[in-house]
Amino acid sequence: MKYKTIIEPFRIKMVESIRMTTEKEREKFIKEAKYNLFLLKADDVIIDLLTDSGIAAMSSKQWSGMMIGDESYAGAKSWKKMESTIKDLTGYKHVLPTHQGRAAERILYGCMGGKGKTFISNTHFDTTRANIEFSNAEAIDCPTEIGKKPSAKHPFKGNMNVSKLTSTIKDKHQENVAGVILTVTNNSGGGQPVSMKNAREVSEICKKHNIPLIIDACRIAENAYFIKKREKEYKNHTYKEIAQEMFALADGCTMSAKKDGIVNMGGFLALNSQKLTEQCRNELIITEGFITYGGITGRDMEAIAIGLEEVFDPDYLQYRIASTTYLGKKLVQMGIPIMLPVGGHAVYIDAKSLYSHIPVDQYPGQALVCNLYLKGGIRSSEIGSVMFGKKEENGKRIYAPMELVRLAIPRRVYTQSHIDYVIEVFEQIKKEKIKAKGIKIVKEPKYLRHFTAHFKFI
Ligand SMILES: *Cc1c(COP(=O)(O)O)cnc(C)c1O
Image (cartoon, rainbow, N blue to C red; front, top):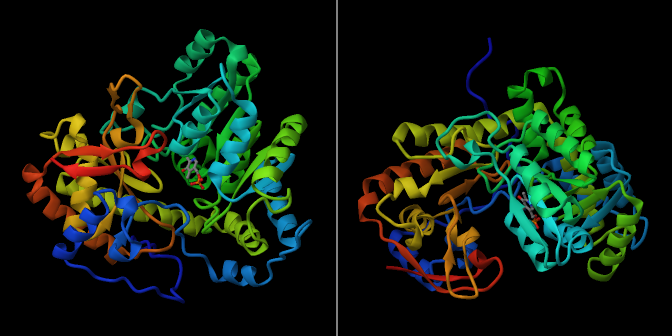
């Protein structure tokens, strides 16, 4: 008998209590946090869906790995283990450890970028864009048309728009295009997968124009799950084989191990080019640490090596995607507008459509994020005009094409009843939606403003 209930494929060995709060208390907490949920105390949150990054529950195997972590300054055993796991997975010749994904991005795009250079991606993640722009280069997104429509169904909405990629290379002149970045899954575009077919086409275009292709591999295992289920020719491949094939199409990758590495801290950069590796290693030594630890402890490198294997376990991946889909399906049944189909690590609410009475210059996404906290102590994040919009030098405000709110699901952390609670809070949100007010920004920094900006209800 094959049962339809997909259970969490683990037992819980250690627990962490959740502190319950009342709506009255939360009104005070969010006011003190200037209506920016990044500024809340984590202890004042009941269900934390702010991100899936770095808050995974490690396995007993990873914790036992922590005990044998080799903390030698140079050439540690744990480094060797992490390096060989990554070389085996990616096939790239050189691996550079970094303390998290953005450090790998800063080093790589600092070396590849600079004034007059352009990078093109299916969608640059916020830290990727910030690091590219910080080097004075330009970051251009080329998502597909269907990827921009929240309710349109397509198996690979994370794909790169290849005709736009080609025309952008032409417009910018190929010698100015420093790199093409394929983000898998496409985080900011809705956690949507990229097909192997698309990756192959992108790879061919890059080869033809002599432009390096870099994979932002944060969720490559989740992306492999969708390829196996949705791209026929891969149905008999293992998840790891699918990931390996995708890596082989590119010249290098950056990865935040805080996502599909299932650890709390760590990342890396892997490259084929000897010359670029040498440049990056110089940067690594100055800013992160020696080339065999780059800002991470030996025990963390041990945990990354184990996590990168556990993430390709078919039972794990099935549970992982099933739990995200469960939340998405229930919200759809309730009539909450979400990005469809449901992506891998998160459910994205279309706040522009849910709060259709709130104009984009009053940030409907930020309004929903605040209301989810007030009503249920749920912390989510705005992926819309607060994150991607900006204020230009002349004071003109630019808005994002979509106003999404992300409910990111941490790996192996919450059970189904936690998710059922979230669903019940949404019933309340739906009842009160007409009463929801818009938001204004009262203080904002120049880069990554969503982390520290201050807001107010209008
Ligand atoms: C998280 C993330 C990063 C940055 O990694 P950090 O470890 O948070 O610095 C880059 N790209 C994508 C797609 C991500 O999800």
